[in-house]
Image (cartoon, rainbow, N blue to C red; front, side):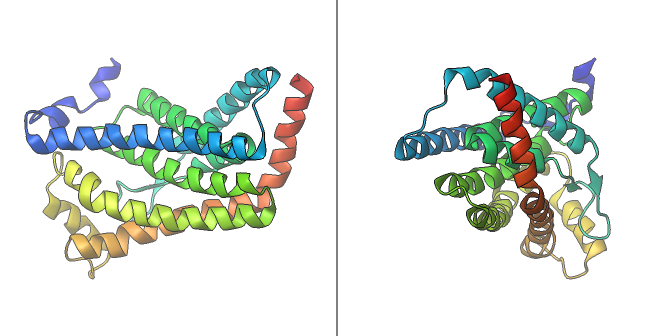
Length: 254
C-alpha cells in the first residue's frame, strides 16, 4: 500500500509535543503564504498592465501547466546526491527548470502550481523517506525561486529583466534556505535523526562543519547557491526558444 512508504510513526509519534504542532503550523502557513503571494502578485501585475486571462486560453494554460509539471516530475525522479559536497539527504535535480519556464510564460501562480503538482506526485510515486520534511522543503524552496523571478520578469518582459529576476531569486533562495533549515527544517528532521548525527554527516564531508551555524554556512548555503545558479544559467540560454514553442502551442489550440 502507498501508506507503507510513509514514515507516519516516526514523524507523528510525539504529535502532542508542542514543537511538532508548531512545525505543522509553520509548514501549512508557509504553503498558504506562498500561494497568496503568487496570486496577489499576479493580480497586481495584471491590473497595472491592464491584462486579463482570456477564457479561450484557460484550457491551454492548464494543458501547458500539466505538461511542464510532468516534465518536472520526471526531472525530480532523476535527482541525485552529491556526497562529496553535502549530506546525502540533500538532493540535486533540475525539476525547478520547468517551473520557472511556466512562471515566466504564464505567471507566478502557474509556477507555484507546477511546484505543487511536482511535489504531490513525487510523494505518490516515491512515498517519503523524510516524513514529508524533504517534500515540504522541495516545494518551499522551489516556490521561493519561481515567485520573485517571475514577478520581476512580468513587469518588463525582456531578457535583461529575466536575468535580473533569476539572480535575485537565487539570493532569496539562499537566504530562505538558510533561515528555514536552521529554524524549521533541520529541527523537524531531528524527529527522525538526532541533530548530532546530522551535523556529523556534514563534518565527514567538511571538517569545518562543527555545529548548526557552520552546517548552514558550509553545506546549506553552497548547495542552494550552486543548484539554483545552474538552473538560472540553463533558463537564461533556453527560455526564449521554449517560450516561442509555448506561444506556438497556445496559438494552435486557440
